[in-house]
Image 1 (tube, rainbow, N blue to C red):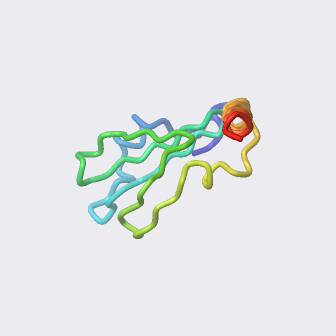
Image 2: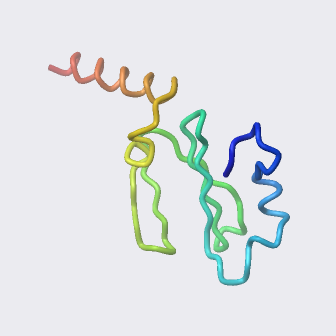
Length: 96
């Protein structure tokens, strides 16, 4: 996915309507860059979007891989990530 400021930005609706989804594709993933949101659409689920957020794990069945959203976004610096990390740090302090 490209920047929304660019004219070649692909929205989820555009992607689903396009010929990009060939008969061999089993799933596709869109990762939001401004907020923490990993969107996965699977052929086996009728291309219905599933959204994953910080603290969630995502399984990519087509490549037999499971990652946490934290791992996917570990180098992203935005308000969502900062809030999540601050919240985890505060919870860990309170649990001591």
